[in-house]
Image 1 (spheres, helix red, strand yellow):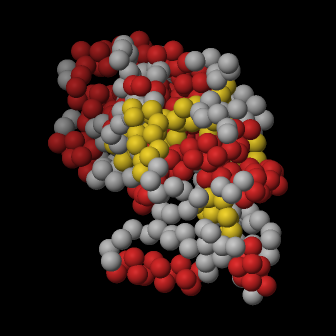
Image 2 (tube, protein in one colour):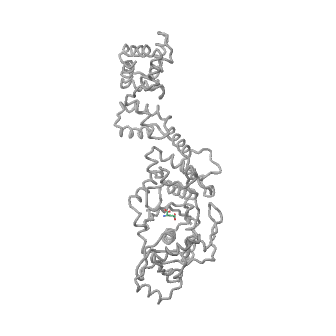
Image 3 (cartoon, helix red, strand yellow):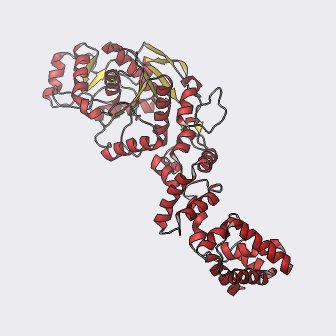
Length: 479
Ligand code: GLU
């Protein structure tokens, strides 16, 4: 039998990291077992759902490298089918019309609150006669459809992550509302727990993998599956992603949408790699830097932890830096070029762009670091206090003059690394200046401070546009 998994996102916001990780676990498991990964857009909350969010979710999945196997299904296209099933449940007596008004419900909640009880409907209209129904309808009352939940029933299933889970019927909040309010004998629009069962059954979903916040929904859904005589899928409930304080990662934690991670400079491969390890601990993995294909070979739902997974920025940053380091130079250079283009920075040549990429890539954690790291190669940096102090307290003036003269004598030499080293060695020997002073003075001239990337390689790059000369001259003027 073909095994089929799905992601069923509600397009009520930008693609969230929690949804992305659920997608990833589904996709990895589908790959592992040779099954299919499908998508259903659950867009039946008409007030909150937006087509641009659905688009954002699909684009985010693509960006992360998570491909789906069939055309995504839109839940809103299936409302008339959901209603047919609600009618079926009504007809067989598993569901009924409930006319409780909003005010009556608030009153009931109020009483329960006073007694310290959780909200629960009292199923007051479970046994209305046809006559009573007619009367309510003639009074112009609207109704929802409620699914009967036996108080005494125990719902049990073997969760592929958590083992056996038991739920008592009495703890499900009373009879379950299947549809929104409607007038007369109409059936209102279907609600999540009903629609999800009908659609998962229609899509032949064999394994439902979703967040642990859906555990009580699963108990309700199992009852609907049984009432409709549908075959049950297996269920797995993944741990939530937690923030530093151990609370569910939310919008308050600043960064939660996949777009934000992309804009911050995370690579899709790195983010996906990190997310896979967020709550999953493989029995055997030689490295934590693994491609999705490699992970899918060793992935198993049973290796997902039950406890919440703390989001660890340090680890994500480390993984990202590893991907940057290991990326093919030309590819990375292409990505970095886009950041330069945005800043209107024009490299003198393709080769120069490649050399600068090689120079900065080891000190990049995020792609956006390319801006700061390459900035001194495009814009003249101010001479900072530590640079000024160094120039003042050493033979910098003399050292820089010697270097400048050398370059002028050689007719504005375009340097390579060996030549640059040779110049330092020669001047140091001939004029008895310490190499360290020569190099540090040059560093201040180039970068305005005592830190920065490899000096000799940087010099080679500066010399291509002759900005080594102009920077030395500017520095000399400042001393
Ligand atoms: N639309 C639900 C959500 O986004 C789907 C839950 C499920 O996977 O059944 O939470």
